[in-house]
Each structure stands twice: as structure tokens, then as C-alpha cells.
Length: 174
Image (cartoon, rainbow, N blue to C red; front, side):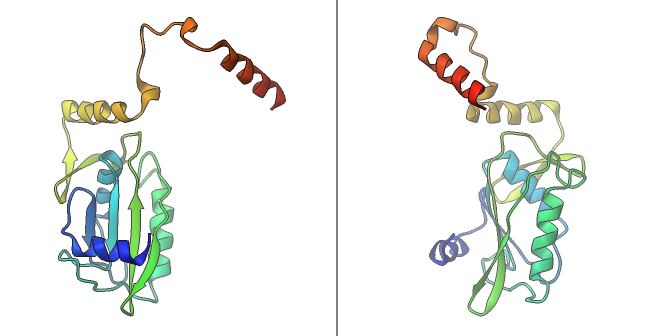
């Protein structure tokens, strides 16, 4: 992401796809609630070292690498984020201060942190407790990923025969 795009985001208010978190020397306690909520909704951008008004506070230059490494490690730890989802935070220097940007994509799965499901609405992360609310998330995600849709009237004759031949040839060459 380029600096101009980052500056544009920093001028915006927190919302369903944007979160600012003050962070000087360690990961904010609720960071994985936001990551989980973004994965469960439509994804978004998290900026560490930025206050709620979009003002750059900065992350400690001495601690930024450790923070990045911890976020990456914890995102790959099913005890923290289940199922795990490896994130790639990166540090950016703006006006002599460092911030950390975490771009969180939309996921096809429902994620939990600390055994809880979170979803994003407006500028907040909300714990989802009811079975019907969790079912709504599944239904919303199903619309994005066609591999989970059953097509009951689809017949073998609906496929092109040449495709089957290509797949068989590919399998034999592998």
C-alpha cells in the first residue's frame, strides 16, 4: 500500500473497514478481537500507533520489529486465532514516526479468538453469542464462496467433455 493511500485512510474516521489503535511498545490487548471481526466481516485495515482520531502517535522504533513478529506468530497460532490465518503486518515511517499497518482480508471461514466469535459493525468489534447470529455469518460467507453452494439441478451433461479430458491429462502428468 502506498503512502498516499495510507494518508487518505488516516484522514478517515474509524469504520467497518478501518481501525486505529494506539500502540507504543506492545500489541494492544484487543487486537485479535478486531482481526477476528475483520476476517468474519469484509476485511479491513488496522493501523497501530494511531489514535482514534487518526493522529499518528507512533510505535517505538526499538519495539516495532518485535510487535510485527508477535502479530505474525500469534495469527498462526490456533490458541489465539482459530482457524489460524497468517497476517503480514508491515511498518511504515511517516513524518519521522513509525506505524504498523495490518491488512486483514475477508475470510471464507468463521474465526474465533479466545473461543469467541466477533463481527464488525460501524467502528466496533462485537462478540456474537447466539446460534442464529453465527448462522447469519455462515450464510453471508456462503454467498461469497461458491464452493459451498449446492446446485441440485446440475447434471454431468452441463459440463464440457473437453474439460474432463484436460483434467485427466493434467492428473496423469502430475
